[in-house]
Amino acid sequence: MLGGMEEAAHPRDVAFEEALAALGAGPAALSAGEGRALDDAGYVLFRSVVEPAWLEGLRADCDGWGVGVAGDSAQGGNQQMARLGEHQGAVLRALRWPRLLAAVWHVLRRPFALGAVAWRCPRPGLGQQGLHMDWSGPGDPGAFHVVTALWYLDEVTPDNGATRLLPGSHELRRRPPKDLADPARHHPQEVTVEAEAGSVLVFNGHLWHSGTRNRSGAPRRALQCSFVAREHRRMSCTTVDEACGIPPAARHVLGLME
Ligand SMILES: O=C(O)CCC(=O)C(=O)O
Image (cartoon, rainbow, N blue to C red; front, side, top):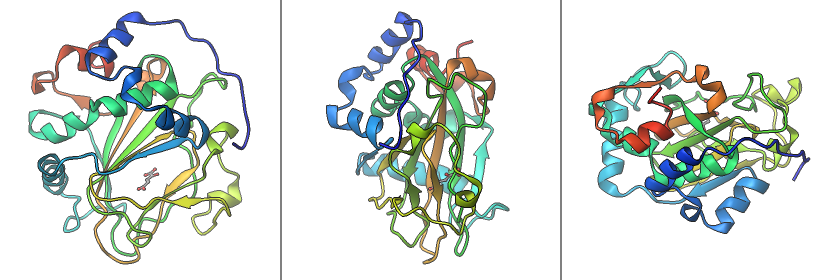
Protein backbone atom coordinates (compact mmCIF):
# COMPACT_ATOMS: atom_id res chain seq x y z
CA MET A 1 0.00 0.00 0.00
CA LEU A 2 1.35 3.46 -0.86
CA GLY A 3 -0.50 5.54 1.71
CA GLY A 4 -3.55 5.64 3.94
CA MET A 5 -6.51 7.75 5.01
CA GLU A 6 -9.55 7.37 7.23
CA GLU A 7 -12.79 6.52 5.43
CA ALA A 8 -15.64 8.99 5.99
CA ALA A 9 -18.85 7.65 7.49
CA HIS A 10 -21.93 7.79 5.23
CA PRO A 11 -25.49 7.28 6.43
CA ARG A 12 -26.79 3.78 5.82
CA ASP A 13 -29.32 3.32 3.01
CA VAL A 14 -31.15 0.09 3.82
CA ALA A 15 -33.34 0.20 0.68
CA PHE A 16 -30.25 0.35 -1.50
CA GLU A 17 -28.61 -2.54 0.33
CA GLU A 18 -31.82 -4.56 -0.04
CA ALA A 19 -31.91 -3.84 -3.76
CA LEU A 20 -28.29 -5.01 -4.05
CA ALA A 21 -29.14 -8.19 -2.16
CA ALA A 22 -32.17 -8.77 -4.43
CA LEU A 23 -29.80 -8.70 -7.40
CA GLY A 24 -27.48 -11.25 -5.78
CA ALA A 25 -24.91 -8.52 -5.14
CA GLY A 26 -24.80 -8.74 -1.36
CA PRO A 27 -21.49 -9.14 0.53
CA ALA A 28 -21.37 -12.89 -0.26
CA ALA A 29 -21.00 -12.10 -3.99
CA LEU A 30 -17.33 -11.23 -3.36
CA SER A 31 -14.80 -13.58 -1.81
CA ALA A 32 -12.63 -12.33 1.05
CA GLY A 33 -9.63 -12.40 -1.31
CA GLU A 34 -11.44 -10.29 -3.92
CA GLY A 35 -12.38 -7.73 -1.27
CA ARG A 36 -8.78 -7.62 -0.04
CA ALA A 37 -7.49 -7.16 -3.58
CA LEU A 38 -9.78 -4.15 -4.01
CA ASP A 39 -8.69 -2.72 -0.66
CA ASP A 40 -4.95 -3.29 -0.97
CA ALA A 41 -4.08 -3.33 -4.68
CA GLY A 42 -7.11 -1.27 -5.76
CA TYR A 43 -8.31 -3.76 -8.37
CA VAL A 44 -9.62 -7.26 -8.92
CA LEU A 45 -9.58 -9.35 -12.10
CA PHE A 46 -12.46 -11.78 -12.58
CA ARG A 47 -11.01 -14.26 -15.04
CA SER A 48 -13.10 -15.90 -17.83
CA VAL A 49 -16.46 -15.16 -16.22
CA VAL A 50 -18.42 -14.25 -19.35
CA GLU A 51 -19.91 -17.33 -20.93
CA PRO A 52 -19.54 -17.79 -24.72
CA ALA A 53 -23.05 -16.70 -25.83
CA TRP A 54 -22.93 -13.56 -23.67
CA LEU A 55 -19.43 -12.78 -24.93
CA GLU A 56 -20.64 -13.11 -28.53
CA GLY A 57 -23.52 -10.75 -27.67
CA LEU A 58 -21.09 -8.16 -26.27
CA ARG A 59 -18.87 -8.46 -29.36
CA ALA A 60 -21.87 -8.03 -31.65
CA ASP A 61 -22.97 -4.95 -29.69
CA CYS A 62 -19.44 -3.54 -29.87
CA ASP A 63 -18.95 -4.19 -33.60
CA GLY A 64 -22.47 -2.92 -34.31
CA TRP A 65 -21.51 0.33 -32.64
CA GLY A 66 -18.80 0.81 -35.26
CA VAL A 67 -15.81 0.76 -32.94
CA GLY A 68 -14.68 -2.83 -33.40
CA VAL A 69 -11.42 -3.60 -35.16
CA ALA A 70 -12.90 -2.77 -38.53
CA GLY A 71 -14.63 0.40 -37.39
CA ASP A 72 -13.32 3.92 -37.24
CA SER A 73 -12.95 6.34 -34.37
CA ALA A 74 -11.15 9.62 -34.12
CA GLN A 75 -9.73 8.84 -30.67
CA GLY A 76 -7.96 5.65 -31.57
CA GLY A 77 -10.88 3.51 -30.54
CA ASN A 78 -12.76 5.07 -27.66
CA GLN A 79 -16.43 5.83 -28.05
CA GLN A 80 -18.99 6.69 -25.41
CA MET A 81 -22.54 5.34 -25.56
CA ALA A 82 -24.96 8.17 -24.90
CA ARG A 83 -28.01 5.97 -24.61
CA LEU A 84 -28.65 2.26 -24.04
CA GLY A 85 -31.81 0.43 -25.03
CA GLU A 86 -33.31 -3.02 -25.51
CA HIS A 87 -30.96 -3.73 -28.42
CA GLN A 88 -27.94 -3.66 -26.12
CA GLY A 89 -29.13 -6.57 -23.98
CA ALA A 90 -25.64 -8.03 -23.49
CA VAL A 91 -24.34 -4.66 -22.26
CA LEU A 92 -27.31 -4.13 -19.94
CA ARG A 93 -26.64 -7.56 -18.46
CA ALA A 94 -23.00 -6.61 -17.86
CA LEU A 95 -23.98 -3.41 -16.04
CA ARG A 96 -25.95 -5.34 -13.45
CA TRP A 97 -23.65 -8.33 -13.09
CA PRO A 98 -23.84 -9.12 -9.34
CA ARG A 99 -20.11 -9.50 -8.71
CA LEU A 100 -19.44 -6.15 -10.38
CA LEU A 101 -22.10 -4.40 -8.31
CA ALA A 102 -20.77 -6.03 -5.14
CA ALA A 103 -17.26 -4.80 -6.00
CA VAL A 104 -18.56 -1.27 -6.62
CA TRP A 105 -20.33 -1.32 -3.28
CA HIS A 106 -17.20 -2.68 -1.58
CA VAL A 107 -15.20 0.33 -2.76
CA LEU A 108 -17.78 3.12 -2.47
CA ARG A 109 -19.66 1.79 0.58
CA ARG A 110 -22.69 3.96 -0.18
CA PRO A 111 -25.37 4.21 -2.88
CA PHE A 112 -24.05 4.81 -6.36
CA ALA A 113 -25.22 5.37 -9.94
CA LEU A 114 -24.15 4.36 -13.40
CA GLY A 115 -21.65 6.85 -14.81
CA ALA A 116 -20.41 6.51 -18.39
CA VAL A 117 -20.44 3.48 -20.68
CA ALA A 118 -18.00 3.34 -23.59
CA TRP A 119 -16.30 0.98 -26.01
CA ARG A 120 -12.54 1.07 -26.00
CA CYS A 121 -10.70 -0.68 -28.82
CA PRO A 122 -7.21 0.75 -29.34
CA ARG A 123 -6.34 0.84 -33.05
CA PRO A 124 -3.05 -0.63 -34.27
CA GLY A 125 -0.26 1.72 -33.21
CA LEU A 126 -2.57 3.78 -30.98
CA GLY A 127 -4.02 3.68 -27.48
CA GLN A 128 -1.10 4.77 -25.31
CA GLN A 129 -2.29 6.98 -22.46
CA GLY A 130 -0.51 8.64 -19.55
CA LEU A 131 -1.13 7.28 -16.07
CA HIS A 132 -4.27 8.91 -14.72
CA MET A 133 -7.14 8.34 -12.32
CA ASP A 134 -10.80 8.45 -13.25
CA TRP A 135 -11.77 11.01 -10.65
CA SER A 136 -11.25 14.72 -11.14
CA GLY A 137 -14.37 16.04 -9.50
CA PRO A 138 -14.92 17.58 -6.09
CA GLY A 139 -15.75 15.44 -3.15
CA ASP A 140 -14.94 14.28 0.30
CA PRO A 141 -11.21 13.41 0.26
CA GLY A 142 -11.85 10.76 2.91
CA ALA A 143 -13.99 8.60 0.61
CA PHE A 144 -13.68 7.05 -2.84
CA HIS A 145 -16.03 8.34 -5.50
CA VAL A 146 -15.73 6.24 -8.64
CA VAL A 147 -15.22 2.64 -9.74
CA THR A 148 -14.38 1.57 -13.29
CA ALA A 149 -14.83 -1.82 -14.96
CA LEU A 150 -13.38 -3.13 -18.21
CA TRP A 151 -15.02 -6.11 -19.87
CA TYR A 152 -12.41 -7.65 -22.14
CA LEU A 153 -13.93 -9.08 -25.30
CA ASP A 154 -10.60 -10.36 -26.66
CA GLU A 155 -7.55 -11.89 -25.04
CA VAL A 156 -5.43 -9.13 -23.50
CA THR A 157 -1.69 -9.47 -24.03
CA PRO A 158 1.16 -7.04 -23.31
CA ASP A 159 1.13 -6.19 -27.05
CA ASN A 160 -2.47 -5.44 -27.96
CA GLY A 161 -3.21 -2.44 -25.77
CA ALA A 162 -3.32 -3.94 -22.27
CA THR A 163 -4.35 -1.90 -19.26
CA ARG A 164 -1.49 -0.90 -16.94
CA LEU A 165 -2.07 -0.24 -13.23
CA LEU A 166 -0.05 1.01 -10.29
CA PRO A 167 -1.12 -1.25 -7.38
CA GLY A 168 -1.96 0.62 -4.19
CA SER A 169 -1.92 4.08 -5.80
CA HIS A 170 -5.64 4.63 -5.03
CA GLU A 171 -4.57 5.32 -1.44
CA LEU A 172 -2.56 8.35 -2.54
CA ARG A 173 -5.86 10.09 -3.43
CA ARG A 174 -4.27 12.49 -5.85
CA ARG A 175 -3.56 12.39 -9.54
CA PRO A 176 -0.14 11.34 -10.84
CA PRO A 177 2.47 14.09 -11.02
CA LYS A 178 2.91 15.77 -14.39
CA ASP A 179 5.97 13.79 -15.43
CA LEU A 180 4.23 10.45 -14.83
CA ALA A 181 1.14 11.62 -16.70
CA ASP A 182 3.31 11.74 -19.83
CA PRO A 183 2.26 8.68 -21.92
CA ALA A 184 5.91 7.79 -22.54
CA ARG A 185 6.71 7.50 -18.82
CA HIS A 186 6.58 4.32 -16.78
CA HIS A 187 6.44 3.72 -13.06
CA PRO A 188 8.81 0.97 -11.86
CA GLN A 189 5.97 -0.70 -9.90
CA GLU A 190 3.31 -0.61 -12.61
CA VAL A 191 1.81 -3.92 -13.72
CA THR A 192 0.30 -4.84 -17.06
CA VAL A 193 -2.93 -6.83 -17.12
CA GLU A 194 -2.97 -10.07 -19.08
CA ALA A 195 -6.35 -11.77 -19.32
CA GLU A 196 -8.43 -14.23 -21.27
CA ALA A 197 -11.33 -12.96 -23.38
CA GLY A 198 -14.41 -12.80 -21.17
CA SER A 199 -12.52 -11.51 -18.13
CA VAL A 200 -13.57 -8.42 -16.17
CA LEU A 201 -11.21 -5.96 -14.50
CA VAL A 202 -12.79 -3.84 -11.75
CA PHE A 203 -10.72 -1.09 -10.20
CA ASN A 204 -10.99 1.78 -7.79
CA GLY A 205 -11.27 4.85 -10.05
CA HIS A 206 -8.67 6.60 -7.91
CA LEU A 207 -6.08 4.01 -8.94
CA TRP A 208 -3.42 5.27 -11.34
CA HIS A 209 -3.86 3.38 -14.59
CA SER A 210 -3.90 3.76 -18.36
CA GLY A 211 -4.38 2.02 -21.68
CA THR A 212 -1.23 1.14 -23.62
CA ARG A 213 -0.30 1.14 -27.29
CA ASN A 214 -1.66 -1.64 -29.45
CA ARG A 215 1.68 -2.68 -30.90
CA SER A 216 0.62 -6.00 -32.41
CA GLY A 217 -2.53 -4.80 -34.13
CA ALA A 218 -4.50 -7.74 -32.66
CA PRO A 219 -7.95 -6.62 -31.50
CA ARG A 220 -8.48 -5.65 -27.86
CA ARG A 221 -12.14 -4.75 -27.68
CA ALA A 222 -13.44 -3.74 -24.26
CA LEU A 223 -16.63 -2.44 -22.73
CA GLN A 224 -15.75 0.23 -20.18
CA CYS A 225 -18.23 1.37 -17.56
CA SER A 226 -17.98 3.58 -14.52
CA PHE A 227 -20.05 3.96 -11.38
CA VAL A 228 -20.09 7.12 -9.29
CA ALA A 229 -21.18 7.67 -5.68
CA ARG A 230 -24.81 8.80 -5.78
CA GLU A 231 -24.05 12.36 -4.63
CA HIS A 232 -22.14 12.81 -7.91
CA ARG A 233 -24.98 11.56 -10.09
CA ARG A 234 -24.91 14.68 -12.21
CA MET A 235 -21.70 13.21 -13.65
CA SER A 236 -23.63 10.23 -15.04
CA CYS A 237 -23.64 10.56 -18.78
CA THR A 238 -25.05 7.38 -20.27
CA THR A 239 -28.83 7.07 -20.07
CA VAL A 240 -30.84 3.85 -20.23
CA ASP A 241 -34.26 3.59 -21.93
CA GLU A 242 -37.08 2.86 -19.55
CA ALA A 243 -38.47 0.19 -21.84
CA CYS A 244 -35.38 -1.98 -21.91
CA GLY A 245 -36.55 -4.63 -19.49
CA ILE A 246 -34.23 -3.82 -16.57
CA PRO A 247 -35.98 -4.92 -13.37
CA PRO A 248 -36.81 -2.26 -10.73
CA ALA A 249 -34.12 -3.37 -8.23
CA ALA A 250 -31.47 -2.96 -10.93
CA ARG A 251 -32.86 0.41 -12.02
CA HIS A 252 -32.66 1.52 -8.40
CA VAL A 253 -29.07 0.32 -7.94
CA LEU A 254 -27.94 1.91 -11.21
CA GLY A 255 -29.54 5.20 -10.20
CA LEU A 256 -32.01 5.12 -13.09
CA MET A 257 -35.20 5.59 -11.07
CA GLU A 258 -35.02 9.22 -10.06
O1 LIG B 1 -8.20 0.78 -22.26
C1 LIG B 1 -7.75 0.63 -21.12
O2 LIG B 1 -7.20 -0.41 -20.79
C2 LIG B 1 -7.88 1.73 -20.11
C3 LIG B 1 -8.58 2.92 -20.65
C4 LIG B 1 -8.57 4.11 -19.77
O3 LIG B 1 -7.99 4.14 -18.73
C5 LIG B 1 -9.33 5.31 -20.19
O4 LIG B 1 -9.87 5.33 -21.31
O5 LIG B 1 -9.39 6.27 -19.39
